[in-house]
Length: 334
Image 1 (cartoon, rainbow, N blue to C red):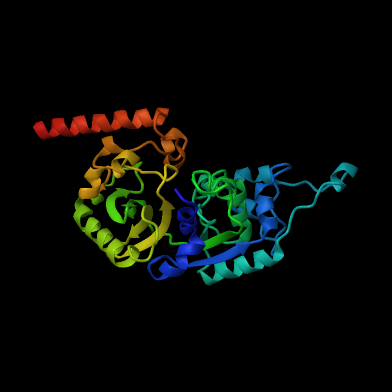
Image 2 (cartoon, one colour):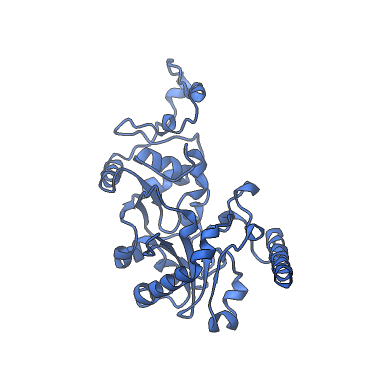
């Protein structure tokens, strides 16, 4: 994988060309001081001082009886406390971002150059990435371990690059849509400019409706690639994610590089690079309860499992696939 292939998948690079087919997004360049704040784990967890006095923590309380956990007693600071570094503040950035949130309808979900803080959604009262203020965004970003990839390891898999992070970071504010359904998200795999596979994005659940709509979904996704994506994205091999609305209109969600750090979902990378799929692309969905992948029930979201070849989960998934094929053969024979 080349550095330029990774760079093309940054949202600030692809969104301007594809915004007519994607969800509405406003992108802000982040000051280096804010990046340093996100990476700093040398002291206590501190949210920035807000110019609007908007504190995210009370908004995250699940039960009224839990409020006592957040009571702060007033007292005179000791000499040691008075020497502590005050919380950071980013008034200009906060003002710009809060204005953008208002422009986008009052609620957004955040994303850096490549990644969103999905692993910190637990801190939200509804376990989502919905944010209505700069403080809530900062809480998610500061709590996320997955964003360390963007901040420190974005180019680790590149064969022609000695850097680990981009020169500039961006925060994308994407309009929040409360009625999106996870079963209508799909990942498309493009190898040497050829569509070789389509996979259900949420592989931890069986959705019967996908079996009923599979043919129609496959057609609109293939047409979307041909008409909207194929001539506009320069990489030879990559993946992209889409959302298919109930009226079968397709919305572009994201681009990902063709590498092992991108989940192949219901495929394996060996399959995706084989001649079989190049000659005959496949659309894979979870066909039954037996085909679901490990997810939140493992205490680790599927996106963050180590499924690389030789890992324990790799062997588990191979066994699960073989069992599913065995059951399918048995059902067909019966």
